[in-house]
Amino acid sequence: MLAGRFPGASVLGLDSSAAFLATAGCGGDERLEFVQHDVTTMPFPGAPAAVIYARFLLAHLTEPQTLIAAWAGELAHGGGLVLEEVEWIHTTDEVFSEYLDLMAGVLRARHTELYIGPMLGRCEVPACTRRITTSPSSSRRLREQRACSRSTSPRPATTRRLSGSTPRRN
Image (tube, rainbow, N blue to C red; front, side, top):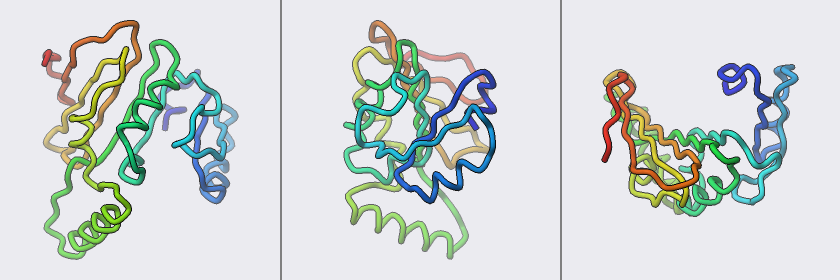
């Protein structure tokens, strides 16, 4: 996905699972490299990174606020940390609803949270970063995206809607 969005970039994928990495490495794109690495351990291979992207990962990790700060420290100057997590899921499908309840219970037993998106809004932004919040549009209310960009000085938070409205300062 990142390689498609940034055609001139090389992309390094990290995962702790050798089986997942074997599957990921089947694409044949020379710009892609995959390395077995625990994302809770710093430094990251290839750091500093221009972009660190994590999708639906924080819900499975304990101490997400600590990890966010650590990941921000792995960024190159001007780099971006993009976190995409679930804020909430509403469904009328009883089977899927039961599945979500079970998964939420499993994650809570592991001291993590399925609906971690709201926590991202409450977490402290690492020093020298700014928060950019992308609000869910009416057609994409199943996820919330957060991004922190490393800069030379802290900036006020900015909110931007997916619909392309003008950013507003908080």
